Each structure stands twice: as structure tokens, then as C-alpha cells.
Picture 1 (tube, rainbow, N blue to C red):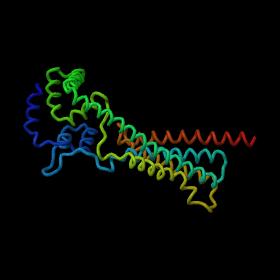
Picture 2 (picture 1 turned 60 degrees about the vertical axis):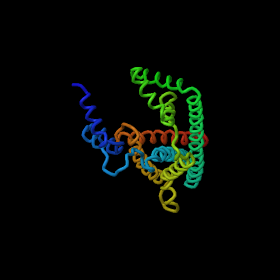
Picture 3 (picture 1 turned 180 degrees about the vertical axis):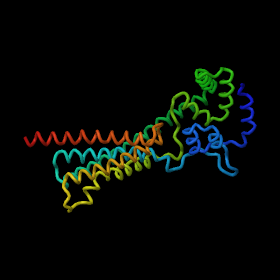
Length: 284
């Protein structure tokens, strides 16, 4: 059957359709439910037509990956120290000093790399803007070529690009993505705050491998028992972070959680064995 009747009907109902509810749209996709997908694209009367993420979700990725680095790195240090037979005081000193140093390095690296990347993108956009002002026909021809290579007929591509070129900012931002593969940063992006979020997440989750040692100072628990507590707390948090990470991938929450748990376990095991091996060699 021809798609034209369905397309015509969609155009007739355009006033009922706006930018989709992203949460509902994702759920509809996971369930492969076409009716739910249609509902996700409908706007409630008076609601804004917006598909913007919440501010929390904008930083969720930095929180998750900063947290994963923090907890795995700190636990690796704890495991190495435990394998080397060091005392509780040494484990805490190494753990905290390494955690804050790595967190600062990662946070600053995140901020500086994002700032440099955004500056490079905006420089390219300025060049494209100058070329558009100087020779718009050439820029339009480039975009037509991009779309024809994607499978659009030359006539349709020229029609689309010519109309889009009436709106300079839209044309330039689209050209940046289609031609150069660069997403123009938004006005509200703040690399310094991104770095702060990464730093804070690293420190917060990096604390968990150390809590068992920190809150049991003065107790009669052995070093082996303390290390066991650290393993349990770290394992739980690794699984939780892995499950949250599944929000950015096609993996199920349990698969992603188990994957990160195994990865963290391997890292800690290697660190423990190296610490034990070095201690054995030194002790003779």
C-alpha cells in the first residue's frame, strides 16, 4: 500500500503533534509499541513543545562515568595496598591522596578538553559563516551534494537546502553536523561546571572502597575482614553504577551492572596480585 495517505493524514494532524516526550518515546521504543510512540509525540494542550533533557539528565553521564573511574581507581589502590600487606593507616593515606589527586586531574581534564573542543567547533562555525556570507551559492551546493550522497534526489535536496538557507543560524548549525560532524555547543554549556560534576562524582563514589576502613578505626576487625567489607561495598556500588550506565546504551540494566562489576573485579584482582607479588619479592 502507498504511504501517501498516511503521510497526508500525518500532515493534516500536524497541529496535534509536537516535539516528543523523550521518556515516553524511549519506553515505546524499548517495548516496540507504535501506539505508545504516537502518544509520546502528541502534545498536551498548553504544554511546551520541547524535547530538552532535564538539567539532571544533562549531567548524568558525567556523574556515572566520573563515579565509575573514582570507585574502580580507589578500589584498585586499596586492593594493591591490601595485597602488599600494608596497615590500615597506609591504606587510608594512599586511598585518599590518590582519590583526590585523580579526581582533580580528571575534573580539570574534562573541563579543559571540553572548552578546547567547543572553541575549535566555534572557530569552524565562524569560518563557515564567513564563507556563507562571501559565497552562499558555494555553501548551498556543498549541502546539496551532502544530501544527494545520502540518497536524496538532487531536485529535492536543492529545494530543502535553498529554503533552509533563508535561516542562517539553522543552515550553519545543520551544515556543521552534516558536513563536518560537529555539534555546535549550546549557549548554556559550562565546561567548568561539567568538570566540577566529574570531580564531585569521582570523590563521592571513590569514598565507598575506603568507608569500611574509615568507620572501623579502633575496632577489633582484622585487615582481611576490613578488606572484605570494602569488596562488598564496592561491588554493590559498581553494579548500581553499571545499571545506571545502561540508560546510555542498548544493554539491559542487569547486563550492564554485571559487566561493570566484572570489569572492576578484574582490575582489583590484578592490583591485588601485583601488590602481593611486589611485597613477596621485597620480603625475600
